[in-house]
Amino acid sequence: MKQELDRVKSDVETIQKAMGLSPSMGRDWIQWMKRDNWLNLWWCLPGFILIASALLPLGNTERYFGLVLAQWTGLLVAALMLGITILSIRKMTGNDGRPESLIREYKRIHGLDAQGRWFGLVLLMEFLLYLIWTKQYGIDFQAFWSGLWIIMGSSCLIGAVASKAWPLLGWAIPFLAYGLFQTAIPGQGKVSGIPLGMMFVAVALSFSIIQVWQIRKIAGQNDTH
Image (cartoon, rainbow, N blue to C red; front, side, top):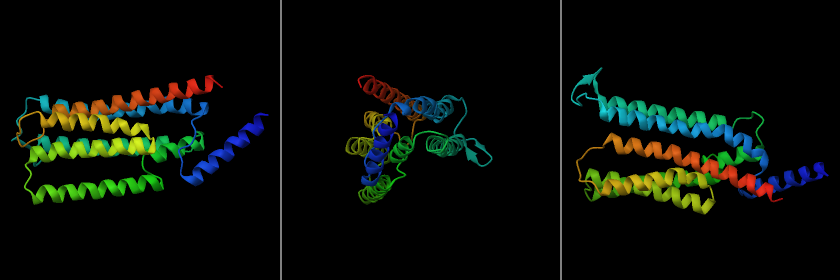
């Protein structure tokens, strides 16, 4: 009986893959999702660095190896973001025994399938049009910076709802909150590291909370069968 059920499940997943649909969540996902959840917390690290840099009693006019502190912080944060992204994708989509359906779901969330590539292309075009529009109308930096995060957050929110890729809310909610917060503070022509760092911490916590919610949802669905 178990072999028949496994065969039916495999057939359903094959059909879903062919149609580009989200795979059904199974109990065999839980142990891997719990193991992967620690990766989400790594997004706190760029946030902590930004906050620490903003609080350091060092002037932003002094140069260290040709760059001021804010520039070194930006480079370090960018490198960390790239490293965390690569590490997360490699771990979450690795062939280490995890179910193929879970790997496909992670690839869908990270934009590595056909649907995700189209979404990424739309985001890129949206960003380029936004740059052209702000330059054309001479939008000041504070308005540009706020609008950028609001657009990115709105796009992630639409993507999460449209594709039911709920982990995208881990980007959408902090991005929108940060962008709206920026509209409420007086324009200074520069980026404050503390609110930006807090946004990254919020991203990490949002990802972790959503992952825990999904794990409980899977456990609850399977307990009722």
